[in-house]
Length: 238
Image (cartoon, rainbow, N blue to C red; front, side, top):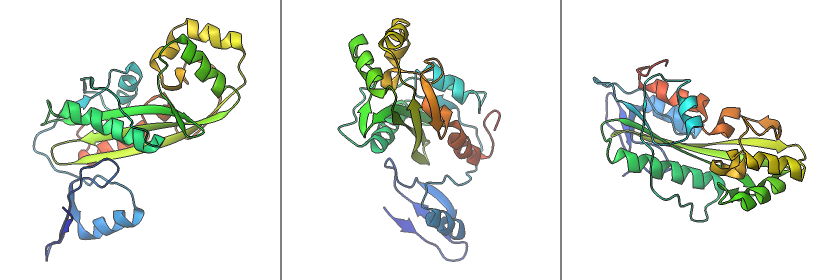
């Protein structure tokens, strides 16, 4: 692994495929130096003779709707593996979980482009996943009441040549909630499949969002669209 250079039309090859590091890619030495100075994972333009299918490795209807805003044609193949964050900090956890989901589905769709994603809510650095029951949902929402917390979404885009993994963070401020409001919301059943036991789109609890609202919903499509556009604009609306 490492970087290879050739004289003449210099080409650099990055050979890492781990979450949070540079993807396998091919780009000019000049462009490589530029993006390395920026210190971000960038997916360079790739030229493919055959369009790959886009596969969303998530059963979330919210992610499906969000992805539909930036590309018209994709399939949903949910990852089924157990989600294990292993005590990692929130940003590292969502990177790992998104990578694991993409990798699981990619094993059966190796000729396609697979998108994995995972979202967590973190209060004081402590991850809040999906509530196990109504009691836990109440405890989560009570803890979030009147306070600001962070929402992290990790995304992995995986093909046979390139893997890009990134995480987006948004800050969310809750207004103060009464016990009755919390119980009424829990009674709708909406909190039970959502990180932090709430949805920014349906709870009515959010006073302010710093950063991407769509990231809070479950998919930072602004950043994802930029990555997908590097595939020559081959996908739907891109």
